[in-house]
Image (cartoon, rainbow, N blue to C red; front, top):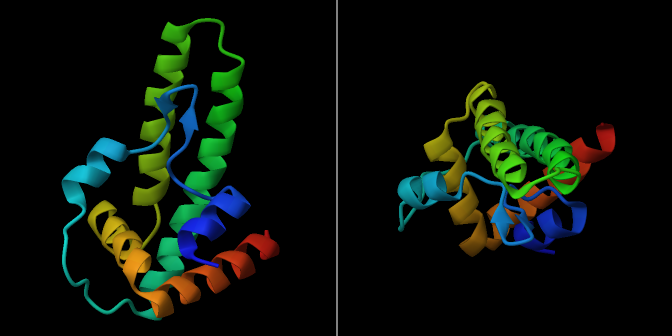
Length: 130
């Protein structure tokens, strides 16, 4: 199972499409993701990456519910913006993780099978711990 599939399967992805609306820091991801080799990911960074992913997932889940019950498109858009900000705060609040490094690791996991497997295993372990 790939990291991307694990995220989809366990609903831990940071990008969510909801009726054509995106709840994720997509614009920031496009600006910060750098093509090419990523520095080696140590265990502390890997743990911080997974904790940040789980924290953003919790925020995302809260906002998805609120967006689905919003009374207007304007309210939905406002909630999407709030959700993006809250997700960014969750990421930035994780010690040892920056936005730039988060997206570097995420990008590397898409092409590095070993890193991908490490992330999947840790995601599953931390998600089951609650």
